[in-house]
Each structure stands twice: as C-alpha cells, then as structure tokens.
Image (tube, rainbow, N blue to C red; front, side, top):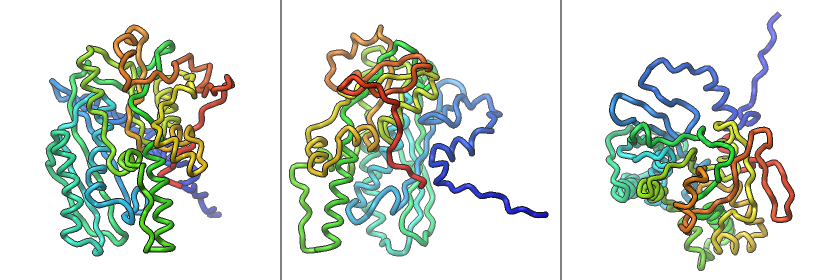
Length: 345
C-alpha cells in the first residue's frame, strides 16, 4: 500500500532551519577546506594566506522593490553586503563575480546603470570584478554576487570563539536601515494611490542612505589591526541584532545578557519609529540590513576601545546554561527571540 510522503513547507522551517537541514550531513573531504557552512564566509587554505569566500542572492520582489530602489544603488548594495561578510571574518575582500538573471523588461541602459553601482563599490573598496554570468528570467531581476577575500590564518575571527566573561560589542548604530525601508514603503503606498503626490522624505537622509546605500565596516577591521587587537568572535548584522546574537551564541556554545538601554540608535531612527508608532528597539533588534559588526571582546582588550565613540558595549557573554536574555531598562530578564524579516516564508 503506497502512502503519500508528507511534504514539509519551507515556511515551516524558515531560512535558517532549511539551511541547517540541507547542510547537517556535510562532511569536509579536502584538507584545504578550513571552514565550510556555518559562518559568515568559508575559509580555504592553499598554503600561505587563507582564501575567504562568500556569496549572496538578491531577488526582485523579495529583497528589493524597483519602485523605489534606483538601479545604481541596487548594484552598489549587492556588492557591499557581500563585502560585509568578509570583514566579519576579520579578512579583506579582493575579488567578486556577478551573476544576473534578467527579464526582457530591462534595457541595455538599465543594466549599465546597475553596473555603474557595482563598479562604484569596486572602486571604493579596491575590489576586482573578475567574472560572472548572465541569463534570462521570466520574473524580473535576480543578482548573485560572490566575493573572495584573504587573511592570515592567525587573524581570522569566527562566530565560535566567544567565552563567558567577554564583552558583547557593536559598531555604529542599529535600526536605521529598517526604518528607512518603512519610510520608503509608506511613500510607495501613497504614490500608488496618488501619483501626483511627491514623496515626503525630507529630514531622513541618514536612514534612507542606511537602506539604499549601506557601507560595510572596512574601517573597523583597520582599527582592530592598528590597535593590535582581535575579537574573540564576530558576525555582521544583516538579519537583525537578535538573530545575530543567537547565531553567535549557538556557534560559541555560550549564553548572553543583552542590555536594552545600551543598544545604539540614531535620532532619525527614533524619530521615524515614533512617527510610524513603532518601538525603535524592535527596529534595532529585528530590522536587519544595518551591516554593522557584532563582536565579543576579552576584558583584557576593553581599554583599547573604551573611548572610541564608534564602539558600544551592549552586553556580556555568560555560561550557556544562563540562556540568551534581554535585560530590560526596568531590570526584567526575558529570553531573546529572533523575530526579524524571514527570507523564506
């Protein structure tokens, strides 16, 4: 008697659950593969410096909306979000490849505009575009960028090195990209109803740039080198602070106490959140696309960064048995949950 095999919806697992399921049985066969799936980038060692590799996929209608995302900005962003993964390994990106799937709605001039952003990112970060592929699409635009970087073995930083007693730190400020997206979405909905209405974007240049033209934190890696310090663990913030803290703690087999009152946010982020009746902390914890660096630091290195306004200590690493918790401004301790935007759902 044949019984139909039960099918599991991808949305039941979510993006990270699907990745875990597809990769749980991988066995590394080559000695040159130092790190495979499970970090911001793979690490390959062919003697001398390590090669660090990462890839990302952006799909129209899922990751971007061309109603309000200029093609030049999209090309730029497609590159820099990949560079961020390399910097999160404490490595330097060197080369990229770009793959495109294009529908017939795009003209040659439109593709050239997209590439102008790609070339600008390459120029700004000293990256070589060394190859790629182009094919047709029945549904809009898909961009896949792969990046190769390099690092000395001893300089690499993984998600798995955090220890109880380490400080949890973040660069820059959080939530701006999410609030920029909410502003763009709001104005796009208004435009759909009344195309004669001009978008109301004044006074929010910062959060719009955080969404449309983010910058990876190459400067932070340079600071680490200059100060002769190395984080114990690190990850970039692409899917929201909560999600990244949970990834880091899972890989390091530790717990964490995140201090709500220490999470850094820009005034424009707070103002836009207030205007849209959104708790700004929700934007910071779950919004994503900030591309700041989240890292843990030994207390012995704290004095090196304590006076740098670009770094904020937002919590501490504890034993795994104590869990991963948010300490509210009122002193309550609640389990931290990743409730950010899901790619697959």
